Length: 452
Image 1 (tube, rainbow, N blue to C red):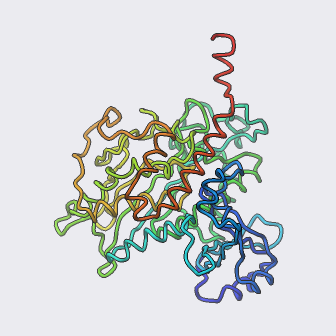
Image 2: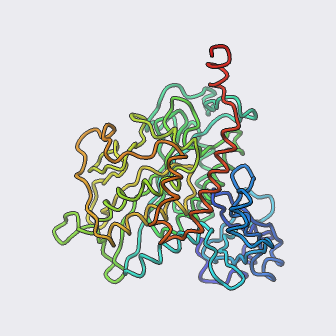
């Protein structure tokens, strides 16, 4: 929400805000922080948090001690968290008038914390700015509505809509199927409007009660903030209407996964022109280099698009998800689609990030790969004509273990984002995967218990 026309304190008072949720994003995308009375927030103008929250896993555990004490001060000192007045959002569902304020993180010397996902995105945007460029992004968020389920061992079920019946079969782009949840989405749009979120289109996707919300194109940092807020808003609206909303990459067996498709282009700061089209309306050299950078480096940053073991269940042929980093014009069977557009809107759609990805890190990684391609003058492969699922020359790592190893050895990421961030992120994801491997699945019980 843009409050630049009045100081933060005046805005909070004019909106009668009594509580402020001070938050930062950890590596997994979970909002962590403190809830303060408004006056205490104004007196302190921020908060302090242990830097260790940035090394916490999705299960609440921490990385191994050897990594923990390598990356963090042994005294477990606090980081300084300062509010961003451009990232203030009312919470319409709260009982008391409440605002969420996203904070930036710094060390005791005023240096940006390297492990912070928001700082990672800021670092990438600074690289663009040094070249006189400004990225423009437009995310598409897919998710499922499901029945509320208290037992994680049970498969998720399709929720019941206004008709009193669950959706049957796949109802891609069905208006009536989307209308089944009109009361829920009326709340979502009302709440998002109150928060200043730049929502555009609502679409019923391929899976049963699978939906997609598109955001209007804009500034990468602001949209990453908005995705954090939108996910929470969507979950709160679902709970109000006695269903659940999940952004898992692959929540339901034999149904399509959920993505966070990223449309991205680059503007010349001086002229305001899209640098992806040349004077003749053709693909510019920089556009082709941007594509080449995505092709070359996405395999090294894949854990930032697919952060969980579940994420890799989405990458299956013929399931509306890519399995490679090929590119093509209006081709949804490859990882990098170039939609038909006017020269001003010429862009590439990165179809690899999952809905479960941390938006700061996914957007940063996608933009970084394209940036390096432009700086290094890389050349892309030929565009794919027809089905791209069988193309094997630019395949992705097949498992989270393979992907983390590629990321750990990425000289590009360490050089431009920092070795400390790479080590911390890989350690968090390995700790989560070790936790995952301890759980025995229903498949193992069904097919192995009495057979092997």
